[in-house]
Length: 55
Image (cartoon, rainbow, N blue to C red; front, side):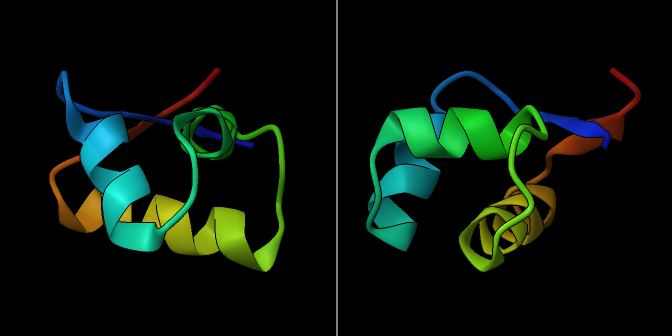
């Protein structure tokens, strides 16, 4: 699975927006999980300017 790179501070902002902790966001952006929550986090990250890359 691809990972998503974000600007500094985005993980915290996404965690606040979604309502989860930063570790969950980090794991989702690294592509470790493919749950509904992880997919939602990745979608939000891309909308906020994240860039999808190969691992």
